[in-house]
Image 1 (tube, rainbow, N blue to C red):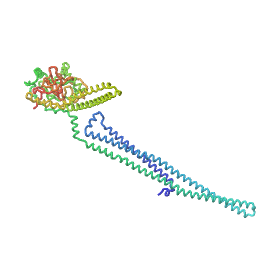
Image 2 (cartoon, rainbow, N blue to C red):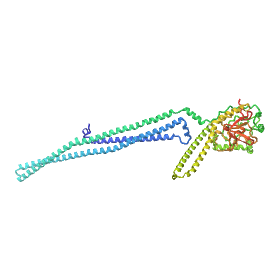
Image 3 (tube, helix red, strand yellow):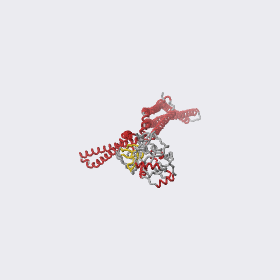
Length: 611
C-alpha cells in the first residue's frame, strides 16, 4: 500500500489532504493551549478562594482557629491551595510537552511538505516540457511529410507534362528530394524525442512520483503518530497529578476526622468561663413588719453607725443610685442585700411617699455630695474610657487567669531573648579579649549593663504577674474555704459566702459590668436621676473583714489596706470583684474582694437571710 503507486495521478488531492492534516494539528494545539489557560485560571481562582477564607493575622478571627472544626477548615484551605498547585503543574506540563513541541513540529512539517511538493511540481514541469517537445517534433515531422508528398506529386506532374522544359523538371525533382530528406530528418528527430519522452515518462510515473508521494505519505503518517503521542501526553499530564490530588483529598478527609466536638466544647468553657459562682437564693423580705432595723447585740456596727442608721430609717429614705447613668439602660436588678426602701423600682413603703422629681433634682443640685462618691465616679469613668488595671482585676477570675498566664509567657520569652543577647555579647567580649585587634572589649560593657538591667526589670515584672497568677490559681479557692470555716465559727452563726456572680447590676465604679465598652461619654440630664446623693449620713457597717494581702489602693475610689488589718464592711461585692470598706469615719473606699475575708453581720441590713 503506497501512495506512489495507488495515487500516482492524485497530486492535487494529496496536496489538499496534507494541508488539512496540518490544519487539524494546529487545531489540536489551540485546544491544548486553551485547556492550559483554563487550568491556570482555575488554579488562580482556587488560590484566591483559599486566601479569601484564610484567617487574618492578629485578629479575632485567628483566635477562632483554636477549635478543631476551624483547624480542619484551615487544613482544607491549605489542601485546596496544594490542589490548585497541581492544576498549575498540569498547565505547565501541557504547555512544555505538547503546545511548545507541537508548534515546533508544525513548522518543521510545513517546511518538509513544501519541499516535497516542490519536487513534485518540478517533476511535473519536466515531463510537461518533454511532452511539448514531443508534440513539436511530431507536428514538424507531419508537416515535412506532407511537404515531401506535395513536392513528389508536383515533380511527377512536371515530368509527365511534355510542354515543361527539362530544366523545370529537374528543378522539381531536386525540390522533391529536398523535401523527402527533410521528412526523413524530422522522422529521425521525432523518433529520438519520442524515445526520450517515453523514458522520462516511465521515470516520472514509476520512479520520481512514487518516491515523492512515498515521502509525503511518510510525512503524513509521522504527523498522525505525533498527534497520537501528544494525546497520550495530554492524558499522562492529568494522570501524573492524580496521586497528589488524591493525597490532598485524603488530607481533607483526615482533617475532617480529626474534629473533636468534646475538645471544642472544652475550649468554649476555657474561653468564656468567668470563675464566678452561680447566684444564691434571693432572701425573703417581709413587708408586713414595720420598716425598723433591729439592733442586734452581736452586731459589729459601731454606735455612731447604729444611731445614724436609725435616723436614716426614721426619715425619708431613698435608694442610692450612681449618677450619670444613661436613661435608655434597663434598671439593674436589686441586690440581695438591699432593703425594700433601697429598691428604686420596688413597692414603696407605706411610710414613705415618693416626692416629685423636680424636688429631688433641686435637692441634688443644692446638696454637697460626699467626696468618695465623686472619686468612685471618676474611677468608673476611667474604666469606661479603657484604662484597664495592670493586674486585670476588672476581669472574671478565669479570664483574669488566662490573661495573667499569657502575660507571664510573654515576659518569659522576652527574658529568654535578652539572656540570649547577653550571652552573645559575652562571647563577643571574650573574643575581643583574646584578639584585641578585632575590637575593644570595654565598648561592650555599656551594652552588657543595659541588657542586664533589662533582664532584671523583666524578671521583677514576671514575678509580679506570677504572684497575681498564683493568687488566682491557688489562693482564691483555699481562701474561700477558710472564709467559710471562720465565718462558721464567728458568733456561732454561718454567714452565707459572698457570691462573685456576674449579674447585670451596677458596679462600684459607676458602670455596668457588661456594658463598659459601650459607654464612652457621660450625659448629665435632670431626668437621668432617680434619687439624690446621701450627703447626710455615712452608710452603716454590715460586717467586718480581714485583709489577707496588702493592697496599695493607688486608683481613685480605692483604699489601701495592710495584711492582717481588720476593717468594717459597708457594701458587699455585687459581682464586679470589689467590696466597699471603711477604716474610720472619713476613710473608706473599695478593695478587691479576693484580698479580704468578709464576715457579715446576720442582723445587719446588708446581710442575707435565707428561708
